[in-house]
Image (cartoon, rainbow, N blue to C red; front, side, top):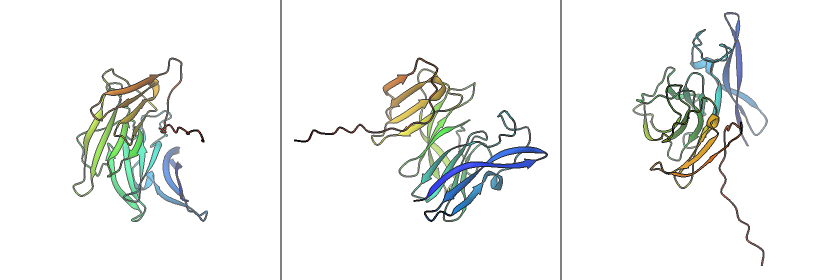
Length: 223
């Protein structure tokens, strides 16, 4: 019965209205609580964001619930960062990405979308990349004790697909992964050994955002 969402947290900084993000929660009794804000953890520096207008700072674009750790995992696209926030401790568990990370990783992502917490605690991320790199899917193994995030699986399409915005990644129950390359108008299902099971592309101007996968339900006829 609990509802959680990300909303803008706009504040005036040196005369400019700067748009951060905050994490909100509505309890079953209707009580609404602000849990955390990007302003609590990160420092805004004028001129360093890549969005237009410059004052669109963090851009929270995905939220997932980590049931095993009772935590929320939030993607902040513009600062290329993912944050885990503990509901019990009411503080940040870890930060992964390019802005003040608490987890060490050899792999960086950029402009990410598509966030999924997998069984066992691994993290699946759609890495949009930059003009110099193709989009890809990354699976991180999070070790909070050693404070590391290691890529244990990734998918790079054989034909370069670059989705400068949008995109998603979904791990299926059979171990395959759905990769949605938003601005390339392409969806693929790939196996763990990175073989394409099927691919669907759109010829018109449609852009693909986030997606959900549903197993087909076949209703047997009543005798």
